Length: 285
Image (cartoon, rainbow, N blue to C red; front, side, top):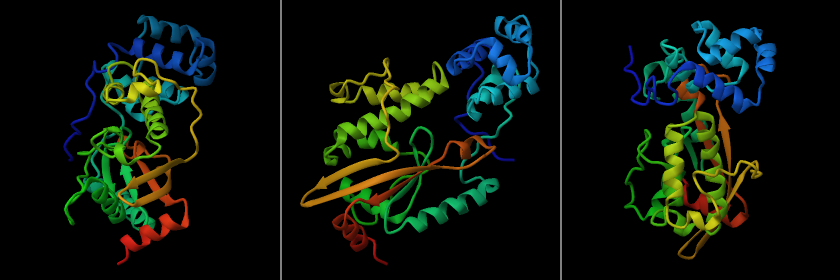
């Protein structure tokens, strides 16, 4: 039996009780008690009693309400914990034998992206996996010795690396736009997680980096009205090389595991012929 993940939430990490969690998620979705009653087929009176603490939910009811409110799997576990139940959805590392087929699929997708970079990150953009072109790109930008590995398994946060003035930000010509897009992702996670979450902590850390406040973004005032593009354009410049690329994000479909549900695959593509030629030349077999 695999060891439990170190990031498994505690009972009181986000909400003190189930009533608070239910009120939070109903409010976040903009549902009245009547509307939630309609979509969940649970009486409005019972929902009112659940939110006031006068009634205690069953595990099955919590899962039913989680589906009705489209609560992410991690937060459904938190709602269960807040009500005194064990989590319903497992959270494992990609090295777990039971996720071998998932790891195989991810490795295949990463390999198919070559000669262009691709990353696998979790919901907080901690780097889990990458292909060789990504290792070459990061190694070149960071000035690492040839062959020095790029840490995976969540040891490196891609957003911190990109937005830190001492990291990759110095090579991002359009870093302000990249920053706004990056913070937009984490703002969404923080708003979804609720108070006291890891996403809220990360958002505060990113907002505290030098220069971030200069573009008008603050951790306590997320701007979710910003229209995000379906892709992120990047202009990278180091020495005499300028690369124009764009990235896309892919998620895994209909997973029932917290880890898999939260994975994102970021794929890099050249935006012009010169950038395409550079990647091909740097990543020939």
